[in-house]
Image (cartoon, rainbow, N blue to C red; front, side):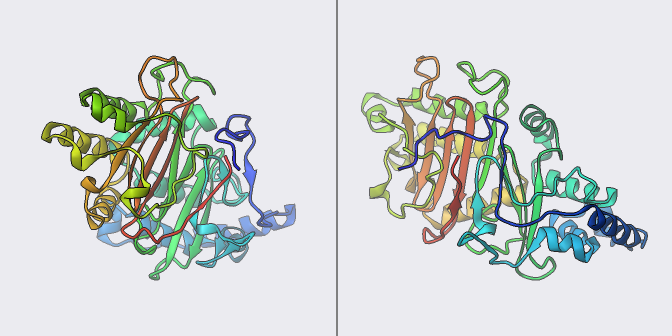
Length: 353
């Protein structure tokens, strides 16, 4: 059985490398730079729409077309590429590298690095750029240093996905290629604002306001509702976000049983959760949830055994429906696992930490 808190690699500054041979020799680096330099020298005529604000998906296509054959061999894979028997595109973890080529390394040309950065920031709500930049600085020394990317499938077709990973990061861009799911598949975000063991109320943690909103809902509950919502122990494995498919298998307080004002606040919690992401991904998540029956088909749980400071402010909690899991773990710092689809039959691959 997996421990709830195994030796977490993001806490010990060790990044898991995946079983993909992406070693590049010194000679190959020279070949990469030579090939990509010639590609970068060819100007590309942009459409008026692209000049104004290119979408991340169009930038992924442009990035793919700029890659040399050698570069593609290092970071581009088939749609259903497998590693150790699992589909790598579907993997999610709290600290991992999908390939070994760091975004800020000389493996990429400066133009390619600019495209990758534009893709990354394009996946977020512009109002969150400062907060995401702070998380990257605290957890990874800043953008690009400890992040890697991969492209699955062929951009420009109906099946492709750009994946960026790193410490406290799994995020995707797929232009809705991955059917039935929001965010292109399961994602992960987190923050250790002041070291591994954060203080009560997580000062400086950019994601803690999500938990504040959820705890405000808990305070609105009456005694009987709190008994339903407060679970003695959190899941044994924090990354257990596979879909249960039916309400009977989900623990917690049904949102459908809340009063009108409580339901209104539950909607605020949901909005707070999706807020960091771009509008199209927010909309897709809401569309998936609606297909399941909406927030009324979800339950909310708070976990009593993970109370940092023993102050009755619940650091770990979960909003869950038949095909909707948003698991917020705040002990000892913030880890958030997200899995949203319109069909509970969708499977995912979760990591070990």
